[in-house]
Image (tube, rainbow, N blue to C red; front, side, top):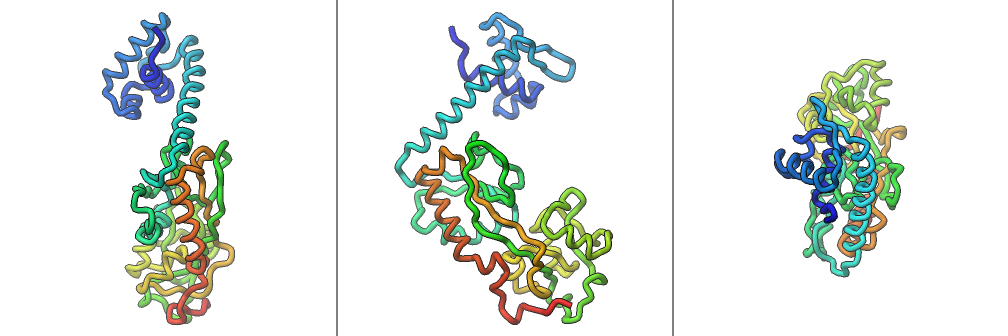
Length: 302
């Protein structure tokens, strides 16, 4: 009797995760189930597949051979899943869209208009900086600031996001001396975020007085009057409680890219959501690039 794909999936997960607990968690099954199914697979094959070390399971020579074949099976199964989804000709079902927290929040505000004519599509909008695996369909569409070097991923540039300095309207004054103002920025683990190098140079290497790990946290801190912050214009300009200081920072920007797996780009429901996202970015280009600001919200940068 040939090993079942279900047993091989459990074997593959244990080989990758290394422990029964983490493998069980990744599969959504119980700890004893993983142990029992692996033992049954070993008995069926007639070879020991893992070395049971004190802290982890390590594939034996036989396990390594089976692992290569099982990974090839998994790749084929995932391809079949994606291609079969692409055979559908109906604009209905679930579309999973992943973006960073600020972009996801902005998209959420525009969901009613994006869903016009797409009532049969269920939207799953996820805020995450992690690169969801499109091959495994952890997401159908990604919006990211960089294009990863991944096979079978199709990209489309959506536009460019500009950044500027913002603060609570009661905090900002026409002749504000930037260096002497309290500042809000990212913590040490997120210094790669747009605007943080500019802020580091402005402060002469000193850290901002208030630090966070999330654009929405920085936004709320700026709204509260805790200090000035470099924010994306689509977050700061529409907020009546914030005042922008001067023009956009020309050296601070982030291109936005739409990513989709090659096998899914023609799937009607995915294509429909892609088109809705593209239309939204085109229509809101002025806001994203920081050029649609009323005169009452503008101050000349000192």
